[in-house]
Amino acid sequence: MLNTIKRIEEEKIIVILRGYDYEALEKTVRAMYAGGIRCCEVTYDSLGKISDEQTAANIAGLVKAFPDMLIGAGTVLTEKQVELTRAAGGKYIISPDTNPDIIKKTKELGLVSIPGALTPSEATLAHRSGADFVKLFPNGEMKPTYLKALVAPLSHIKFLAVGGVDITNLTEALQMGACGVGIATAIANKKLVLAGKFEEITALAREYVTAIRNFKESK
Image 1 (cartoon, one colour):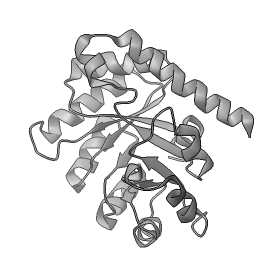
Image 2: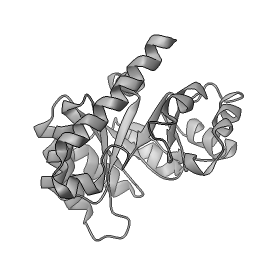
Image 3: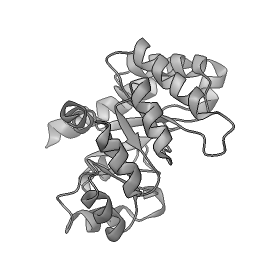
Image 4: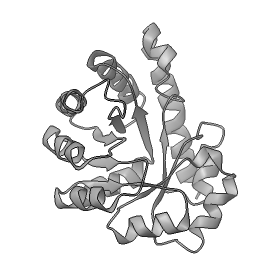
């Protein structure tokens, strides 16, 4: 678990994959991997159109196909989903909200906990409940300086900025205090996936990875 935390802090980008069948997931992850991405989450479907069991099977397939990728689950809202993710070989649990029961189950099963929070009260509740990171969500609805203001008194909490982050403000989010970011369609662009333009996804991934490297070198 400590190695997973360290790698997330080092890689700084978790790509969010939502609504794909396994074939599309595999091709998309392969393209991102070629571009240098090493962390991604496969989201559960809150509407139930894709069963939890199918999502877990997709995670298991990716874990087997890409042993060097850190694969986690997103939109985790139930303890059953935590259990399915653990059985599938996923390494971390990401939720849109702060639910102490989900955090507890995640830690019991030896996974990294990344609940969502927006306010100082939610963030501190998540941290006290055992969260390893707190996902600032929806980050895109707030001013960039909101994260900086949040981090100032809560510097003991590791925040990931999720929502509204793209290549134009990636560095800014890190400068404001995020230790990493969650990115969806800015890398895993659904139009590109459906069109089979995976080389363009590789190019996007490489652009983001280069930006992260440049940020580290500038510090």
